[in-house]
Image (cartoon, rainbow, N blue to C red; front, side, top):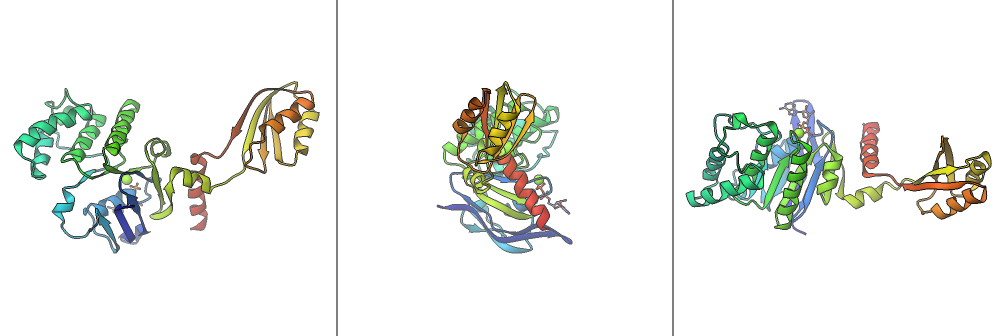
Length: 313
Ligand SMILES: Nc1ncnc2c1ncn2[C@@H]1O[C@H](COP(=O)(O)OP(=O)(O)O)[C@@H](O)[C@H]1O
Ligand SMILES: [Mg+2]
């Protein structure tokens, strides 16, 4: 596996605040890697250090195999970056802004003339390129920021909270775009404070909280790491006390709670014991109307991991 981003004990402080604390981040080539953490976790700071906007206090980092920390125009040409809520000059038109960036990347006039309209199309601004940025909505500005990050067909695209300011439709479009880019071989590193966003688009995740890495791995790996027992939610007609007693007596049942026609059965196992539960209810004279198995979602895992960190500090 080739790492396109690799940090080693990377640390960045603001005065007495340690915003990024001995971070060992590894982003592999051809992945969509989510950098997940609550607001203030240190995501933007890490990204700014990676792209050279801030200087680390200690530790080191490599991007595309090159040490960061000094000017590397040849690396920079292969990395696209979209800042958190990009602030774009309002007096320029969308096409003008992209053209200026294109010139900065050393693209020829012919390349710019071809790529600028193409990219505007890709981000859904095809018909608004000649409008002033000042007339763009937040979401449109975010998309233009994305187009700017994609100029010059970078190998690695770093997006800081790409869905901030986007409406739900815009979020779906940006997500699809990320998947399309990944298919074409672009590595995408995106930060987010939204678990569901990361879940929907990323294959790999690093969770950070208070500057410290909490966990890292594939979505499945992270989910399976927290192996809580399963729960069964069941709706029963003719619900009676004997049914409850029968269920409570089952060896793999930890607790049963009732709310109206519904029972929540907490198990001591992760085995699927729905048929045994159903049998027990039927034997005691109940009729199962609906049943479903509930495992811990990554949402629970996320909250759990952050909670653990909270207690430790
Ligand atoms: N320029 C700055 N000066 C001082 N503190 C900062 C500055 N930027 C960020 N911070 C602090 O550093 C921590 C990490 O911030 P940030 O990297 O922006 O987190 P995230 O992007 O995960 O929300 C926060 O506590 C934040 O208040
Ligand atoms: Mg941020």
